[in-house]
Amino acid sequence: MMITSVPKAIMKRRVQVVSLGSMALSSLFRRQEWQVIATFGRSFYCRDNRGNIICIGQAEIGQGPFTLLCSAGSFWPLTILANGSSLRFRKHQLLLEGDGVIFDLHGASVWRKSLSTINGSSEKLLSDITCIAGKALCDAPPQSLGMVISSFFPLNVHKLGRLSCSLTEALHTRFVEATSRVWHLPVLLPSGKLNPSFGEGLVRLIGLGPGLTPSGDDFLGGIVMGLYKADRQEEAAILADYLYLSARGRVSEISLNFYRALAEGLVAEPYYLFLEAIGREDSRELGSLLKRVGQLGGTSGWDTIAGIVFAISIALTNTNQISNCASEALC
Image 1 (cartoon, helix red, strand yellow):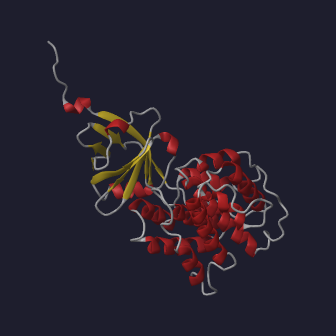
Image 2 (tube, one colour; image 1 turned 45 degrees about the vertical axis):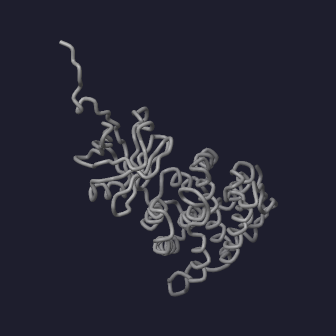
Image 3 (cartoon, helix red, strand yellow; image 1 turned 90 degrees about the vertical axis):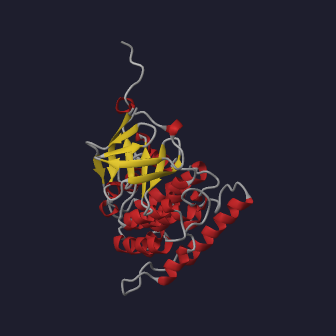
């Protein structure tokens, strides 16, 4: 007897989810209906009707607060994904409706790495960010904020590096001007509240620039990360809350969810590992982790790195370590 049709239940293709972020876990169990809003080669983003975001991605992108990470070698529905596609979450499974693809969460681990656990300041921070500034001039895309890192502290390098066009130059100049205004300002007032001059000086960067997550948002996220790394946890947490509240209504839902993650002290795995490596006595992994972060997004990785270096440099300036710097950035 010849089987002329196969039941739909058998035709469904199963993709194993090996890890999901704590924010994704919380959102999935509150909402069942999801819709695809952005697709890329290795990942796609979905939203619910309350503006919560999840990112479903292949193993190479790394874990994150709202990421569902699929096992290596899994079927990837790139050819059948489209903006507007619907997914339904039920019984620890996310079904891509109409296409017979199931993302199975059974057995998945939960990713929740907090910035508060990042190792604090060390004497090696200065030499590492100096090295990163030099690498930026050699390796960062010309349109990225990696080109402005050298303007954050005295280095024997060209201030704005390679600029690709007048639009890029104008964008870079705005960042240099904004950071120059807040450079010597304390993040917090003696009362423990955010210094309004510092906050207002940075808030103008929210949503600035092109892309899924604009350069301004990536840079500001990097500042929060850098403050955590420089052992300024209170300042980082207060600034993250302020940026999240200020970003509402001004950025895309995807950017806003990144700000929300920062306000909860959460970041994606590539950034977490990179932050851990900065200032470590054994710095053999720093180069490879810098390269990995630098490859994230079009310019997102280097835009975030610029924010990290800026925050660490202002923290070191307050302790007079930068002013005593005689190091030279080398490629």
